[in-house]
Image: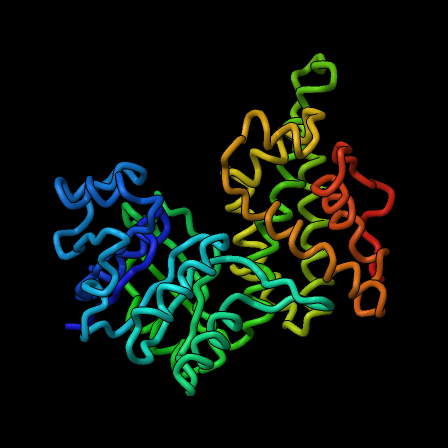
Length: 352
Protein backbone atom coordinates (compact mmCIF):
# COMPACT_ATOMS: atom_id res chain seq x y z
CA UNK A 1 0.00 0.00 0.00
CA UNK A 2 1.28 3.46 -0.91
CA UNK A 3 1.30 6.27 1.65
CA UNK A 4 0.50 9.94 0.98
CA UNK A 5 1.10 12.62 3.60
CA UNK A 6 -1.12 15.67 3.05
CA UNK A 7 0.20 18.89 4.58
CA UNK A 8 -2.69 21.27 5.21
CA UNK A 9 -6.08 20.14 6.52
CA UNK A 10 -8.12 22.89 4.88
CA UNK A 11 -11.04 21.99 2.67
CA UNK A 12 -9.13 21.26 -0.54
CA UNK A 13 -6.26 19.32 1.02
CA UNK A 14 -8.74 17.26 3.00
CA UNK A 15 -11.03 16.70 0.01
CA UNK A 16 -8.08 15.23 -1.89
CA UNK A 17 -8.01 12.48 0.74
CA UNK A 18 -11.03 10.96 -1.03
CA UNK A 19 -9.49 9.92 -4.38
CA UNK A 20 -6.27 8.87 -2.63
CA UNK A 21 -8.23 6.78 -0.14
CA UNK A 22 -10.42 5.26 -2.81
CA UNK A 23 -7.32 4.23 -4.75
CA UNK A 24 -5.99 2.38 -1.73
CA UNK A 25 -3.52 4.89 -0.33
CA UNK A 26 -2.81 5.13 3.37
CA UNK A 27 -3.62 8.82 3.96
CA UNK A 28 -2.00 10.93 6.68
CA UNK A 29 -3.53 14.39 7.04
CA UNK A 30 -1.33 16.95 8.81
CA UNK A 31 -2.87 20.24 9.95
CA UNK A 32 -1.11 23.58 10.11
CA UNK A 33 -1.27 25.73 13.23
CA UNK A 34 -4.54 27.13 11.80
CA UNK A 35 -6.16 23.69 11.59
CA UNK A 36 -6.18 22.67 15.25
CA UNK A 37 -9.96 22.42 15.58
CA UNK A 38 -10.24 20.48 12.33
CA UNK A 39 -7.58 17.97 13.36
CA UNK A 40 -9.16 17.56 16.81
CA UNK A 41 -12.52 16.80 15.20
CA UNK A 42 -11.03 14.27 12.78
CA UNK A 43 -9.09 12.55 15.56
CA UNK A 44 -12.16 12.19 17.78
CA UNK A 45 -15.03 11.78 15.30
CA UNK A 46 -13.39 11.40 11.89
CA UNK A 47 -15.56 14.36 10.89
CA UNK A 48 -14.27 17.41 8.97
CA UNK A 49 -16.26 20.39 10.31
CA UNK A 50 -15.64 22.71 7.34
CA UNK A 51 -16.33 20.13 4.64
CA UNK A 52 -19.20 18.79 6.75
CA UNK A 53 -18.34 15.21 5.83
CA UNK A 54 -17.03 12.10 7.54
CA UNK A 55 -13.63 11.22 6.09
CA UNK A 56 -12.74 7.64 5.09
CA UNK A 57 -11.53 5.35 7.84
CA UNK A 58 -8.00 5.11 6.44
CA UNK A 59 -7.41 8.89 6.82
CA UNK A 60 -5.32 9.48 9.93
CA UNK A 61 -5.05 13.00 11.37
CA UNK A 62 -1.89 14.62 12.75
CA UNK A 63 -1.44 17.99 14.48
CA UNK A 64 1.05 20.49 13.06
CA UNK A 65 3.69 19.42 15.57
CA UNK A 66 3.45 15.80 14.42
CA UNK A 67 4.83 16.16 10.90
CA UNK A 68 7.85 13.96 11.61
CA UNK A 69 5.60 11.12 12.76
CA UNK A 70 3.33 11.58 9.77
CA UNK A 71 6.19 11.49 7.27
CA UNK A 72 7.81 8.50 8.96
CA UNK A 73 10.14 6.57 6.71
CA UNK A 74 7.44 5.25 4.39
CA UNK A 75 5.77 8.31 2.81
CA UNK A 76 5.70 7.78 -0.97
CA UNK A 77 4.17 11.13 -1.89
CA UNK A 78 3.58 14.49 -0.20
CA UNK A 79 0.50 16.50 -1.15
CA UNK A 80 1.19 20.15 -0.37
CA UNK A 81 -2.19 21.66 0.47
CA UNK A 82 -1.39 24.93 2.21
CA UNK A 83 -2.49 28.32 0.86
CA UNK A 84 -0.03 30.44 -1.13
CA UNK A 85 0.52 32.51 2.01
CA UNK A 86 1.66 29.37 3.82
CA UNK A 87 4.17 28.17 1.25
CA UNK A 88 7.18 29.61 3.11
CA UNK A 89 6.07 27.84 6.30
CA UNK A 90 5.63 24.57 4.43
CA UNK A 91 9.05 24.84 2.80
CA UNK A 92 10.62 25.54 6.18
CA UNK A 93 8.93 22.44 7.63
CA UNK A 94 9.99 20.24 4.73
CA UNK A 95 13.55 21.54 4.88
CA UNK A 96 13.72 20.65 8.55
CA UNK A 97 11.93 17.32 8.63
CA UNK A 98 12.08 15.69 5.19
CA UNK A 99 15.16 13.48 5.48
CA UNK A 100 15.23 12.27 1.88
CA UNK A 101 13.75 13.45 -1.43
CA UNK A 102 10.03 12.59 -1.57
CA UNK A 103 7.91 13.39 -4.67
CA UNK A 104 5.57 16.32 -4.11
CA UNK A 105 2.15 17.07 -5.59
CA UNK A 106 0.90 20.62 -4.99
CA UNK A 107 -2.59 22.08 -4.88
CA UNK A 108 -1.27 25.46 -3.74
CA UNK A 109 -2.11 28.18 -6.29
CA UNK A 110 -0.03 31.29 -6.88
CA UNK A 111 3.00 32.79 -8.54
CA UNK A 112 6.23 34.05 -7.01
CA UNK A 113 7.03 37.62 -8.05
CA UNK A 114 10.60 38.35 -9.02
CA UNK A 115 11.92 41.76 -10.08
CA UNK A 116 11.06 41.48 -13.76
CA UNK A 117 8.87 38.41 -14.06
CA UNK A 118 6.77 35.78 -12.32
CA UNK A 119 7.81 32.22 -11.39
CA UNK A 120 5.48 29.30 -10.71
CA UNK A 121 5.23 28.09 -7.12
CA UNK A 122 6.09 24.49 -8.08
CA UNK A 123 9.36 25.79 -9.53
CA UNK A 124 10.00 27.78 -6.34
CA UNK A 125 9.47 24.64 -4.26
CA UNK A 126 11.62 22.56 -6.61
CA UNK A 127 14.51 25.03 -6.50
CA UNK A 128 14.37 25.27 -2.71
CA UNK A 129 14.38 21.51 -2.12
CA UNK A 130 16.99 20.87 -4.81
CA UNK A 131 19.26 23.25 -2.94
CA UNK A 132 18.67 21.26 0.27
CA UNK A 133 19.21 17.78 -1.16
CA UNK A 134 21.68 18.55 -3.93
CA UNK A 135 19.48 16.73 -6.42
CA UNK A 136 16.09 17.38 -7.94
CA UNK A 137 12.84 16.42 -6.22
CA UNK A 138 9.93 15.36 -8.42
CA UNK A 139 7.29 18.12 -8.37
CA UNK A 140 3.80 18.17 -9.86
CA UNK A 141 0.77 20.39 -9.35
CA UNK A 142 -3.00 20.05 -9.68
CA UNK A 143 -5.07 22.73 -11.39
CA UNK A 144 -8.53 22.97 -12.84
CA UNK A 145 -12.16 23.35 -11.72
CA UNK A 146 -12.47 21.57 -8.38
CA UNK A 147 -14.82 22.69 -5.61
CA UNK A 148 -13.68 20.96 -2.43
CA UNK A 149 -17.17 20.32 -1.09
CA UNK A 150 -18.16 18.55 -4.29
CA UNK A 151 -15.03 16.42 -4.44
CA UNK A 152 -15.53 15.48 -0.77
CA UNK A 153 -18.82 13.79 -1.68
CA UNK A 154 -17.42 12.25 -4.88
CA UNK A 155 -19.06 14.52 -7.47
CA UNK A 156 -17.64 14.26 -11.00
CA UNK A 157 -14.43 16.31 -11.16
CA UNK A 158 -11.84 16.89 -13.89
CA UNK A 159 -8.40 18.35 -13.22
CA UNK A 160 -4.96 18.83 -14.76
CA UNK A 161 -1.81 17.36 -13.22
CA UNK A 162 1.21 19.25 -14.53
CA UNK A 163 4.90 18.48 -14.15
CA UNK A 164 8.12 19.09 -16.07
CA UNK A 165 8.48 15.30 -15.78
CA UNK A 166 5.88 13.95 -18.20
CA UNK A 167 6.16 10.41 -16.86
CA UNK A 168 5.52 11.61 -13.30
CA UNK A 169 2.41 13.53 -14.37
CA UNK A 170 1.05 10.53 -16.24
CA UNK A 171 1.75 8.17 -13.35
CA UNK A 172 -0.08 10.44 -10.89
CA UNK A 173 -3.06 10.63 -13.23
CA UNK A 174 -3.19 6.84 -13.38
CA UNK A 175 -2.82 6.54 -9.61
CA UNK A 176 -5.63 9.02 -8.89
CA UNK A 177 -8.18 8.15 -11.58
CA UNK A 178 -11.49 6.99 -10.08
CA UNK A 179 -15.04 6.77 -11.38
CA UNK A 180 -15.54 10.40 -10.26
CA UNK A 181 -12.04 11.98 -10.31
CA UNK A 182 -10.54 12.41 -13.79
CA UNK A 183 -7.07 14.04 -13.98
CA UNK A 184 -5.27 14.72 -17.25
CA UNK A 185 -1.48 15.14 -17.62
CA UNK A 186 0.35 18.22 -18.89
CA UNK A 187 3.96 19.41 -19.10
CA UNK A 188 3.05 23.10 -19.58
CA UNK A 189 3.96 24.23 -16.06
CA UNK A 190 3.94 27.94 -16.90
CA UNK A 191 0.64 27.91 -18.79
CA UNK A 192 -1.24 25.75 -16.30
CA UNK A 193 0.06 27.57 -13.22
CA UNK A 194 -0.50 31.04 -14.71
CA UNK A 195 -4.14 30.10 -15.23
CA UNK A 196 -4.39 28.47 -11.80
CA UNK A 197 -3.10 31.60 -10.08
CA UNK A 198 -4.68 34.38 -12.12
CA UNK A 199 -8.16 32.84 -12.27
CA UNK A 200 -8.48 33.91 -8.60
CA UNK A 201 -7.39 37.42 -9.54
CA UNK A 202 -9.86 37.73 -12.42
CA UNK A 203 -12.72 36.22 -10.40
CA UNK A 204 -12.57 39.43 -8.36
CA UNK A 205 -13.47 41.41 -11.46
CA UNK A 206 -16.33 39.09 -12.49
CA UNK A 207 -17.75 39.32 -8.96
CA UNK A 208 -17.79 43.12 -9.32
CA UNK A 209 -20.89 42.89 -11.55
CA UNK A 210 -23.10 41.55 -8.74
CA UNK A 211 -22.05 44.29 -6.35
CA UNK A 212 -22.52 47.00 -8.94
CA UNK A 213 -26.07 45.76 -9.55
CA UNK A 214 -26.88 46.80 -5.99
CA UNK A 215 -25.73 50.36 -6.69
CA UNK A 216 -27.94 51.09 -9.68
CA UNK A 217 -31.73 51.56 -9.74
CA UNK A 218 -33.75 48.35 -9.84
CA UNK A 219 -35.04 47.79 -13.36
CA UNK A 220 -38.74 47.56 -14.07
CA UNK A 221 -38.29 43.95 -15.14
CA UNK A 222 -35.88 43.11 -12.26
CA UNK A 223 -33.05 42.49 -14.74
CA UNK A 224 -29.76 41.20 -13.35
CA UNK A 225 -26.25 42.17 -14.44
CA UNK A 226 -25.14 38.95 -16.13
CA UNK A 227 -24.35 40.62 -19.45
CA UNK A 228 -21.76 42.79 -17.74
CA UNK A 229 -20.31 39.79 -15.91
CA UNK A 230 -20.00 37.95 -19.24
CA UNK A 231 -18.10 40.85 -20.83
CA UNK A 232 -15.69 40.87 -17.91
CA UNK A 233 -15.33 37.08 -18.03
CA UNK A 234 -14.49 37.23 -21.73
CA UNK A 235 -11.95 39.98 -21.15
CA UNK A 236 -10.38 37.96 -18.34
CA UNK A 237 -9.86 35.08 -20.76
CA UNK A 238 -8.22 37.39 -23.32
CA UNK A 239 -5.89 38.72 -20.64
CA UNK A 240 -5.08 35.23 -19.38
CA UNK A 241 -3.91 34.54 -22.93
CA UNK A 242 -1.75 37.68 -22.93
CA UNK A 243 -0.18 36.85 -19.58
CA UNK A 244 0.37 33.20 -20.45
CA UNK A 245 2.04 34.05 -23.76
CA UNK A 246 4.21 36.71 -22.12
CA UNK A 247 5.44 34.24 -19.51
CA UNK A 248 6.11 31.50 -22.06
CA UNK A 249 3.13 29.19 -21.54
CA UNK A 250 0.83 27.50 -24.03
CA UNK A 251 -2.45 29.30 -24.65
CA UNK A 252 -4.28 25.99 -25.22
CA UNK A 253 -4.46 25.63 -21.45
CA UNK A 254 -6.27 28.95 -21.16
CA UNK A 255 -9.16 27.45 -23.14
CA UNK A 256 -9.15 24.24 -21.11
CA UNK A 257 -9.87 23.21 -17.55
CA UNK A 258 -6.90 25.08 -16.11
CA UNK A 259 -8.15 28.38 -17.53
CA UNK A 260 -11.76 28.82 -18.60
CA UNK A 261 -12.97 25.81 -16.61
CA UNK A 262 -11.40 26.91 -13.35
CA UNK A 263 -12.34 30.57 -13.85
CA UNK A 264 -15.98 29.56 -14.34
CA UNK A 265 -16.04 27.55 -11.11
CA UNK A 266 -14.18 30.21 -9.12
CA UNK A 267 -16.66 32.89 -10.21
CA UNK A 268 -19.58 30.94 -8.74
CA UNK A 269 -18.65 31.62 -5.12
CA UNK A 270 -15.72 32.08 -2.77
CA UNK A 271 -13.68 34.88 -1.26
CA UNK A 272 -12.31 36.25 -4.53
CA UNK A 273 -15.80 36.75 -5.95
CA UNK A 274 -16.96 38.13 -2.61
CA UNK A 275 -14.19 40.73 -2.69
CA UNK A 276 -15.29 41.71 -6.19
CA UNK A 277 -18.90 42.05 -5.07
CA UNK A 278 -17.83 44.40 -2.28
CA UNK A 279 -15.72 46.44 -4.71
CA UNK A 280 -18.76 46.64 -6.99
CA UNK A 281 -20.69 48.17 -4.10
CA UNK A 282 -18.26 51.07 -4.20
CA UNK A 283 -15.98 50.10 -1.33
CA UNK A 284 -12.23 50.46 -1.68
CA UNK A 285 -9.97 47.47 -1.11
CA UNK A 286 -8.82 48.73 2.29
CA UNK A 287 -12.43 49.36 3.35
CA UNK A 288 -13.29 45.76 2.46
CA UNK A 289 -10.25 44.43 4.32
CA UNK A 290 -11.09 46.45 7.41
CA UNK A 291 -14.81 45.70 7.19
CA UNK A 292 -16.78 42.79 5.71
CA UNK A 293 -13.72 40.63 4.87
CA UNK A 294 -11.41 41.44 7.75
CA UNK A 295 -9.04 38.55 8.42
CA UNK A 296 -9.96 36.63 5.27
CA UNK A 297 -7.27 35.19 3.00
CA UNK A 298 -8.00 36.37 -0.53
CA UNK A 299 -5.48 34.72 -2.80
CA UNK A 300 -6.41 36.68 -5.94
CA UNK A 301 -5.79 39.97 -4.16
CA UNK A 302 -2.56 38.71 -2.59
CA UNK A 303 -1.33 37.63 -6.03
CA UNK A 304 -2.22 40.97 -7.63
CA UNK A 305 -0.49 43.03 -4.98
CA UNK A 306 2.61 40.81 -5.08
CA UNK A 307 2.77 40.66 -8.87
CA UNK A 308 2.10 44.34 -9.62
CA UNK A 309 5.74 45.38 -9.82
CA UNK A 310 6.69 42.45 -12.05
CA UNK A 311 3.78 43.12 -14.41
CA UNK A 312 4.75 46.78 -14.70
CA UNK A 313 8.36 45.72 -15.38
CA UNK A 314 7.12 43.39 -18.14
CA UNK A 315 5.26 46.32 -19.70
CA UNK A 316 8.37 48.50 -19.45
CA UNK A 317 10.53 45.95 -21.27
CA UNK A 318 7.90 45.23 -23.93
CA UNK A 319 7.00 41.70 -22.81
CA UNK A 320 3.44 42.95 -22.18
CA UNK A 321 1.50 45.95 -23.45
CA UNK A 322 -0.97 48.11 -21.55
CA UNK A 323 -3.39 47.70 -24.44
CA UNK A 324 -3.50 43.92 -23.92
CA UNK A 325 -4.31 43.95 -20.16
CA UNK A 326 -6.65 46.88 -19.28
CA UNK A 327 -8.67 44.79 -16.82
CA UNK A 328 -5.50 43.65 -15.07
CA UNK A 329 -4.29 47.23 -14.72
CA UNK A 330 -7.65 48.42 -13.36
CA UNK A 331 -7.64 45.62 -10.79
CA UNK A 332 -4.07 46.37 -9.76
CA UNK A 333 -4.97 50.02 -9.28
CA UNK A 334 -7.97 49.17 -7.09
CA UNK A 335 -5.89 46.77 -4.99
CA UNK A 336 -3.07 49.23 -4.38
CA UNK A 337 -4.79 52.63 -4.05
CA UNK A 338 -7.72 54.15 -2.23
CA UNK A 339 -9.87 54.14 -5.36
CA UNK A 340 -12.84 52.06 -6.37
CA UNK A 341 -12.68 49.47 -9.13
CA UNK A 342 -13.83 51.06 -12.38
CA UNK A 343 -14.32 48.96 -15.49
CA UNK A 344 -12.51 50.33 -18.58
CA UNK A 345 -15.26 49.07 -20.89
CA UNK A 346 -14.11 50.80 -24.06
CA UNK A 347 -10.59 49.38 -23.66
CA UNK A 348 -11.80 45.79 -23.61
CA UNK A 349 -11.37 43.31 -26.48
CA UNK A 350 -8.12 44.80 -27.72
CA UNK A 351 -5.61 42.29 -29.03
CA UNK A 352 -2.21 43.94 -28.69
